[in-house]
Image (cartoon, rainbow over all chains, first blue to last red; front, side):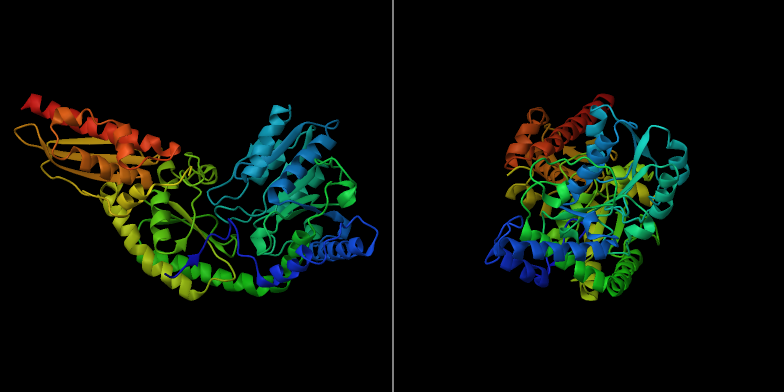
Amino acid sequence: MKKVYLDNNATTKMREEVLDAMLPFYKDIYGNASSIHEFGRLARRAIDDAREKVAGLLGAASVEEIVFTSGGTESDNFAIKGAAHALKAKGDHIITSSIEHQAILNTCKFLEKEGYKVTYISVDKDGIVDLEELKRLIADKTILVSIMYANNEVGTIEPIEEAARIAKEKGVYFHTDAVQAVGKIPFDVKSLNIDLASMSGHKIYGPKGMGALYIKKLTKITPQMQGGHHEMGKRAGTENVAGIVGLGKAAELAKKELSDESKRLTGLRDYLYKGITSRIESIRLNGHPDKRLPNTVNVGFKYLEGESIILNLDMEGIAVSTGSACTSGSLEPSHVLTAMGVDPAETQGSIRFSLSRDNTKEDMDYVLEVLPPIIKRLRDMSPLYEKGKK
Amino acid sequence: MEGQYSEKVMEHFRNPRNVGEIPDASGIGNVGNPVCGDIMRLYIKVDQNEVITDAKFKTFGCGAAIATSSMVTELVKGKTVQEALTISNRAVAEALGGLPKIKMHCSVLAEEALRSAIDDYMAKKKKA
């Protein structure tokens, strides 16, 4: 059966070049990068090289601003808790948005239990954060603003340059969870003037269990992992050399191909959405029409529930996902769509198609062939559909 | 495996039995709401001997909601109204080879839909 993987915001297939770059570090180059001998030096050199590539992709001024972590979640935890703990004497107020990833939201909840105060700014119907609200909310005790660069569920790209400027004008640290943005759209920490940025390896065809946190020089941050002097004393633990090398390779390739690939993906994404609109009635686009990740399109199918669509597509070899109720083991409707003001009944039937470099026009045509009869069959089964027809 | 559907659930999801409506139904049950993500509508046809001769459903919901709807229609057919009232949500779930814990509420909804259809039938009968 034909297989079409369209769940690349969840994770991507690692590139051959990345795996090839990593393999020697699982076999012959096994030294501890902290050792002085040649075995160690070879590992150290590989890490230095990877750090340069990641710094290059993020636009960091210096390689020392890149700290390797175990992934996006650790980077987010490190940024939020690290900054909050380091600035405890200055204040206890954190501002974030209502559509963040769980790695941010649950870290903030954790800090609330420690006594910090967290405010969640709202978004408009397209998922864009309210900058006026941000301006109003920054107070004397505010120590950190964290807003994602692009949303994982709907792909909306946030006005981070302006948000960072607002925070910096008030002397407040700015962090962005850029896990979904890095490697897909231009991202440059220097011109954005931000203090902290999280990225992940497996979203950009790199290894799972690898990520990085950009920490601008002189930023006060408390390490969350105690131990040796690894990673400039910011993150203890013997380096995952193969993983770091893989992340470096993925970053290098992403930087080289970003411009062409983002154009190609935007074309494919819009081709898919146009095809859906011309074949299926009563649908909606979730997310901003233009300010959106090149690879992401989230479509709401009225009168339907998401899981039943996913399972049907899965039977035809197509992998997609939903931010809605059933899949993630939570029965709550998507917090992102809810924050965007989508009718609660309509959040249920929302499906995210997230594309990758491996997807082709033929893949989109296959989806467009398979999807309409599935939607029709499920709608014929739905007690809501007849109501909608009246 | 936690969170995974049994073969039987997937089989009923793939080929749901008795989808549709009964225009001259003896009783109709409506339960759930779209905000929670499940709505079931169950139709039953009852003959003069109080035997349920036909059952059909329409459901908005996840795989488990569709499978439990399908299963409950299969279970009630040929049973008397009194017998049908003894069908519990556990019986529906067991007939499907079990449900993930987080989906057990779907079997509860199926039981409620059946009760609601029978209540509707009883109310209509009283009026007649």
